[in-house]
Image 1 (tube, one colour):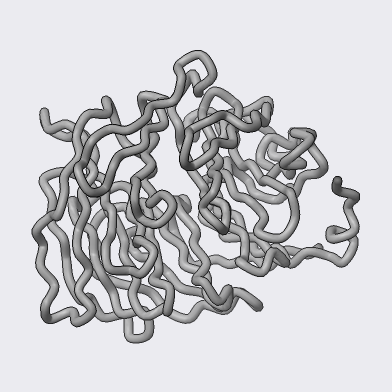
Image 2 (cartoon, one colour):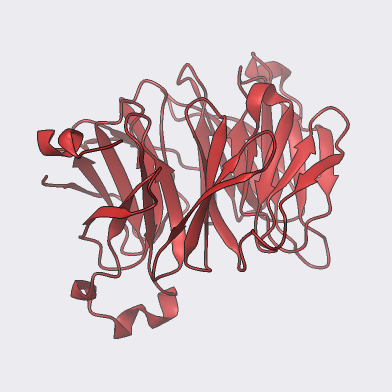
Length: 327
């Protein structure tokens, strides 16, 4: 399995997202310019210029016409995927962190960081079908979590929003009323910052990765803990295979201590775990720094990883991968 090395970012990667068809890969980095690539050969299609801060997160609509990005320049932008044109800018008083389109693309959730005495918040925006009708007002604003909210995604049928972040608590909110419905049990939850969250294809369960060197699998409706995957390094990124019972965890130590680590020490590999048995089944080495982003192609036949080293590595699986015994 030879990776395709995609060099288009000058700064560390922050997020990777495939479109639903699996033919495009969107990458965000700290260099202000989200980029779109062909997902089969790693060719760069284009960039979305307009932000002037690190871009933390992105999401693409189901029909691959709209892209939304959240940035440290205190804005979230809507883009035309095909032309790279800015369609609308949502302005905030603090950096925008996580973005996620709802099922149907009529709503988007955007989280903002704590900043200059302002608490962190989760904003729900209506996304107009025609960009000319787009307005910036929030339908709903949720406050409560302490510290940064690193991820917020829509739950099943858009009835809930699932959020997680610095205070290591996974929360489920009601999207109609804005009420907090559930928090995970402190005894079974993560002990340190939750860095990443990935939903299963059917949104019935989701995976969280944390700096406490573990990843946990949760039920989306009841917030029951299903599985825990333990590693020996902080987890910065998680992904779930849509095809096989595999989860991938990526991480490494803090960027500040990277220079003291030999990349051959194997701390910078993407580790594959059996989703059911919770056992490690393999690893993919290659990055020269911690892995910050992971994504699976919706067909399950390839995955990509983005690192602190500024590279995106695109891996198409060998036929042997699909023969890994699974229960």
